[in-house]
Amino acid sequence: MNFLEIFSQLTQVLSVPSLGLNWIDILIIGIILLYSIEGFGLGFIRATLDLLSFLMSFILALTFYSSVASLLVRFLS
Picture 1: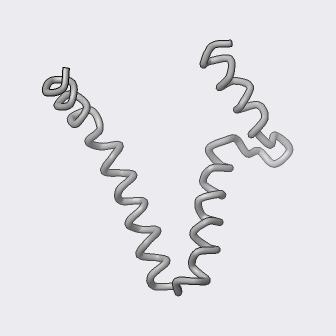
Picture 2: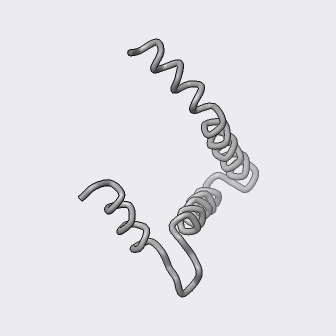
């Protein structure tokens, strides 16, 4: 089995067609649930800041990954 076949099977398993959800929706719901449960222990303000810092780091990683990857390839290969 190659990667595409495994990925295709995984997305079929994780999809919930009766609800109109795909694997990205389930991932987002999982992240929100994780931060909601964590919020009970941390408190609302601290948990909200934690979630915002996660979202900002994710956005920055998506924005700058190609620049960092090209630097790593240039200096480490």
